[in-house]
Length: 237
Ligand code: TMP
Ligand code: MG
Image (cartoon, rainbow, N blue to C red; front, side, top):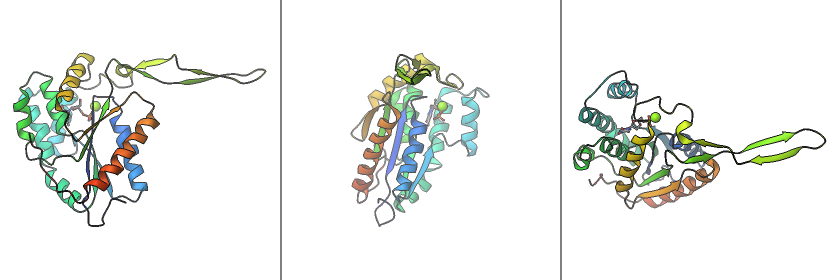
């Protein structure tokens, strides 16, 4: 039980390309931690509910155009406007499971060709995560799914068809928002790679959902118990 007993909560961030399964895995992790009696909240960036978040959302939906540096700073501002609430939640013993954070900010903008140092600068002073879980899925990687085929007579014949594949890029909705293009996502992945540090755990996102879920549970539980007495720090970039 990681919550409320004097120790602070953990800042756990999930990162990955679009359609890597982050949002489903965050939700699963959240309900697992809640079930353990752990004070937990699920957050996500961009937080589209704030006024800055609404500008970001319109930009992502291609309803507005913004200069690359301008949108970069809006994404960062969207984290800054949540920083003090984030800090008080953590100090109050609540663990935060956050779907995307500063690493998305840097990797996506750098993939447009912006200077990495310039991209990192506005993130300095935001809270440093205790754990970053990177769900590793290549945009062109084939994600297997299995189908069970029954032939009815005289007996059920169960065939596990593992021959059916679906490209991550073809999953529902891909291409609906700005950035959801395979070539761009490949560049984002390269930048993510260069951002990895000691807080990162890379999880193979192409494994079955339950396997990924199990790995995330273990990583999160370890993190929560280890960071209770650790000081909160800021991103060092
Ligand atoms: P979402 O699909 O997780 O809501 O994220 C929307 C898009 O915004 C996604 O393509 C990643 C991108 N993004 C940035 O470019 N910079 C950021 O700082 C964040 C948080 C997301
Ligand atoms: Mg998206």
